[in-house]
Image (cartoon, rainbow, N blue to C red; front, side, top):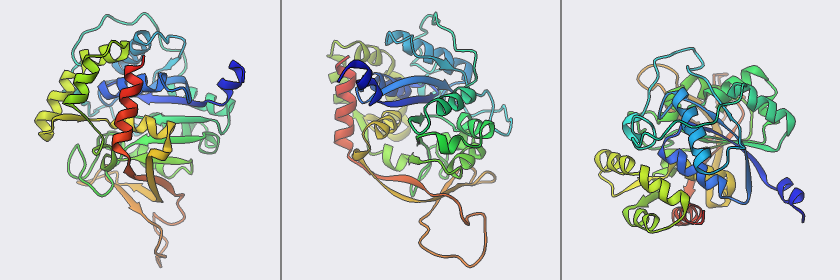
Length: 326
């Protein structure tokens, strides 16, 4: 098949991201995955504020020598216009990339907002675009507000979010991305799109160990060398917070779920997000097996897929292979 044919058969990906050390890994893995074509990055707050997320996204594309890929800047506030944001710089460093203070990127984001870029791409390639959402879901919710037909036009949304059946990582109830904008998350979960949610119940099973880190350090690949430079802060945080000799691969797992879904199993049901109170940000899964008597906030909501198991060794191997062969 010719180059044009090959490109046609690739899955088109937009990565919505808040880089972030594991975001950097996920972006590099995506750029080195022959099954997919990254058609854009959109940015969001989370690990850092949105402005810095945009700067980091542009910087990572420069490192990867892929400045042909557009970056669209996303929302600076939650869907309910809150500007007091939870930023996890204590996990990734104040610059989001391990406190390396890289020079500013030469590139600029495109003139379009993330939401309008998402809507435009879904309209241009109906049913063909997968959004991999690695941060709070504000941009996706804004795309749905902008174009109510977006859920039907987008191919799939693979999102990192929720703590199904386990404790959260912000507090016992909530996982960070959902907690970052619970109202947006509830809009997305109930919008009717084809959604696969990857929660920390799954990503906490996939660990890059000290031994894996050493393998990366000995490797001459550009991506591996770059990641070894930035990853120290992330290892130190995990050691302190979880007493673990390794780091969780949240974002690369979510990215690879979009590339190779056979590495996971999932269940299907309705997910709602609590938007206030002590349980703000909790994701509740209804397996839809019971018929309830009353009409409630749960009735007739569309179902989504939620990951339940993961082939962790295969995931780690795939991440390593794609970072080391660059």
